[in-house]
Length: 325
Picture (cartoon, rainbow, N blue to C red):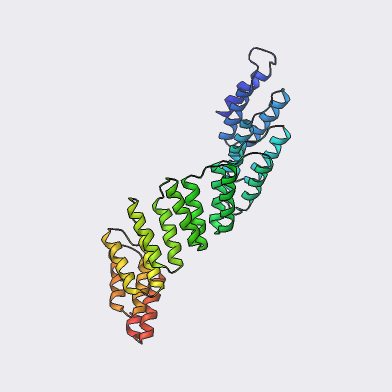
């Protein structure tokens, strides 16, 4: 109840020097209530009142406003409050910076996260694991493996400990760029650090191997996943089917699709499309049409790509009536 909190704080400030003179805790409670009510302007007013009454705002006073602004998407204004903190003689802490980094890392302009991170370093605030993970997420989004390497080196130099999120994010960045060796090296480092990778991390490495058209390498990591006690999911099998299809080993792709089926996993529309396309390229129209029927049976919606693969294959064979059907 922000209005009631403000009422009582106003009553206290109207009798300075009295036994009920407000302190930092009182002001921060009202600032928090205003922000929770979505009224940042009133929260800012009470920070000004703190100063006017000779009470110095704390990091918490400012970070409450920064958090509210960042959560509502007004990241630029939130960043501006870092300047207001500095002007008030209050040094922002790592949590304040992380609030802004978190939202910039998910925004349409993630590169701003780099400038905030640099500002953090210049102000002598040591980033923590969360800070690095947020910046690594930006590198992962853009597939920047060189930037990822630099951040990992910075972590080691500053003595900041990597966690599961650090490794997972960095591995995905390498995988997206097709840097199989980089992704594999980090996965091995995870093991040596006794941090258990999850299925998504293995899938990122398997996917990188698939894009490199190296089925043996991909299969090796699928086997390692099983050794680690993890069960492959539909995405794991899709990557194996994809790499086999890419190198023209259609029989092997079919074997992996059957393994997916035996594992009682639901193939996605993209996996079915891949298999239909593969069968069509092999000229096995019976199998392609059977897969289309199976999609309907398991209620996986066929897409334009599914039908285009069938029509194209029929047209190449000169089977116009089948294409029209």
